[in-house]
Amino acid sequence: MKVMSQWLSKQWLSKLVLAFSWLAAVMVLAPAYADESPDATVKTATDKMLAVIKAGKQSHKQTPDKFYSQLLAVLEPVVAFDVIARGVMSIKYSKNASDKQVVQFTEAFKMSMVEFYGKALLKYDNEKIEVHPVNKATLKKKRVPVNMTIHAADGVTYPLTYTMFKDQKADQWKMRNVIVNGINIGKLFRTQFSEAMQQNKGDLQRVINNWTDIMKTANEKGKS
Image 1 (cartoon, one colour):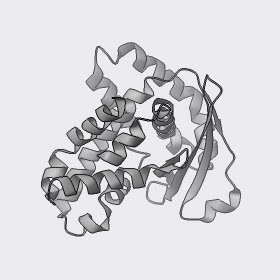
Image 2 (spheres, one colour; image 1 turned 135 degrees about the vertical axis):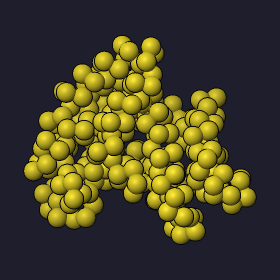
Image 3 (cartoon, one colour; image 1 turned 30 degrees about the vertical axis):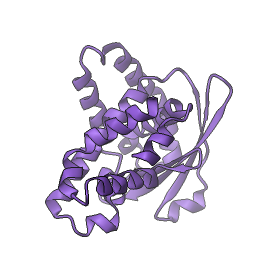
Image 4 (cartoon, one colour; image 1 turned 90 degrees about the horizontal axis):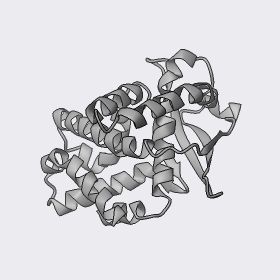
C-alpha cells in the first residue's frame, strides 16, 4: 500500500479524485447521445449531473446506502468496471484466477470505487470544468482520449485525460482508464493490487475478500 498511500497524501487529491468521479458520473446520460462524440456527450450531460450532486449533498448523511446505490446505478452502465478490474489484477494474477474469482473481484473493486469516489464527489464546490474537443481522427481508434482541465478555486489547474472506447454491443462510449495530472490511475491500482498480493503471500482469494478494507486502509494512510 506504500505507492497508493504516497499518492493519496498529495494535497490536490480531493479535487483530482473528485474530477475523476464527477466526469464518470456525468456519463450516465451517454446512451441518450450515443451518436455524439464522447466530449459532446459529457458537455450535454453536465448541467443535469450537477443536480444529482446537489441532491446527494443534502441526503447522503441520512441515507448513505441509498446515495451509493444511486451512484452505482449511474456509473455501472458507462464505466467498464470489468475491463478495469482485469487490468488491475493484471495478466500475472488473472491468468491463475477462476472465472468466479474474476467476477468476485470485479464486484469488490466496483463497490470500493463507488464508495471511494462517491465521498470525493460530495466535495464538489463549483470548480470550473473544461472539456476539450476530441480530435475527430481519434474516433476511429479503439481507445479515444478525452482531455479535460479542472480550474480550482485557488487558481490551480489540473489536467485529466480519460480513455474511452465504444462498446459496440451497448452502442455507447465507456470509460476504461484515466490519467490525472500525469498519473495513470489504472497503473496505480494495478500496483496496489500487486503489493496486496505480496503482503498476503500470493493468496488471491484473501486479497479479493479484503479488497474493500485494503482500499480503506490506503485511503486513511493518505489522509494522515
